[in-house]
Amino acid sequence: MTQHYFSESPVGDARKREIEVELAGAPRRLVTAGGVFSPEHLDQGTAVLLRTLDKMTPEAEAVTGPILDLGCGWGPIALSAGLNHPEAEIWAVDINERARALTTENATRLGLTHLRVVSPDDVPFGLEFSEIRSNPPIRIGKQALHALLGQWLPRLAPGGLATLVVAKHLGADSLQSWIAAEFPTLSVTRIARDKGFSVIQAVRR
Image 1: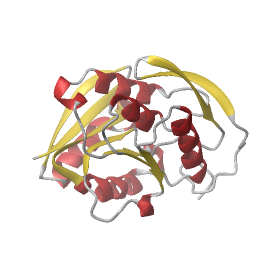
Image 2: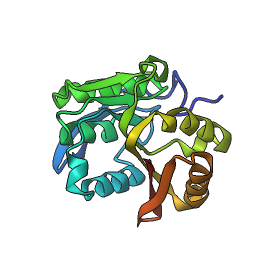
Image 3: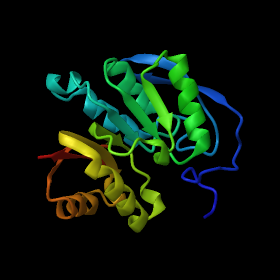
């Protein structure tokens, strides 16, 4: 595989840079680097996902079970979850070792001691999640993406929900249909559409 942000050991420019982004309603100074997803700014799809999550019902704000950020990059989804849910255990997972290092540093900057940053193989076997949140790596290809979701969506706890953001032109509608067909225990809907992105939610019955 060529060196992409979804490579384990990217070879791009590793020099750290600071950017300012808004997370959990306030500006934050965070670090990024080359070789990870969207190193220069908060990706538009991720921003759509975070806005949608911020608008969800008050019941969602009381989440205390584990929350998984699948494909964390430099960490905006996991960091936002950690800021909004101080009582929940947050898991940030990425195959990219540089992404994990950046997320760890950013969590330290924000004082998020309840955020765990690990490789996929280091998530404890049998751990189930109250929520999975992801801007999934669509560009790894349909087969690899389906394998990825097939590994993690079954780890939703009963009543748990997965919230994914996908660009419409990259197959949001077909992915929604695939999830609904592949996982009969999940109720799948599109809960938002914004700036060419769809936010898909799957709830385990």
